[in-house]
Length: 76
Picture 1 (cartoon, rainbow, N blue to C red):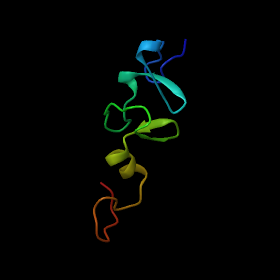
Picture 2: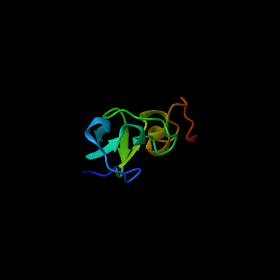
Picture 3: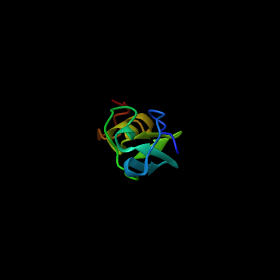
């Protein structure tokens, strides 16, 4: 029986979500930064850690000034 990467408990078929090559409990697949629950395949990952696309992944790993317009070079 596979173990959930977040809580280390066994993942049963009825509650399984597969993402990033691992099997998670539906409630355990969350963004590392904001804690938002994610759906399988609709998120970004870095080093095997899931993040929501916007704003977390973009803010942490995107180009400076993402989403601010103009020539600003800061991150929020």
